[in-house]
Length: 89
Image (cartoon, rainbow, N blue to C red):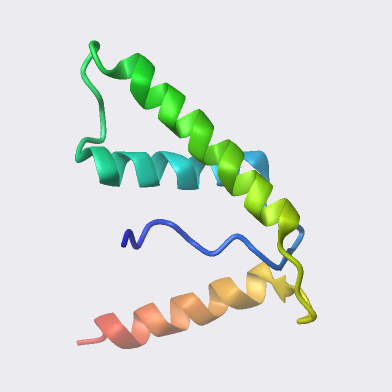
């Protein structure tokens, strides 16, 4: 799907509303095929982002897990290490 959308579930601290909105925005941009909608489509684009953000938040609020929460800093360090290995020349 879209590589810019990151996992938001089971992190400490939990995902912020800004992170949920950013993920929804990336999803709608991908589906719509445009990073900036035309003026004619702006209202429906914004409505879709709001609906996806609400659905995402409801999903995150409803999910349960027995796994311990992940640490954002540790996961970011792992991602940097993977990127370093991937892009090493």
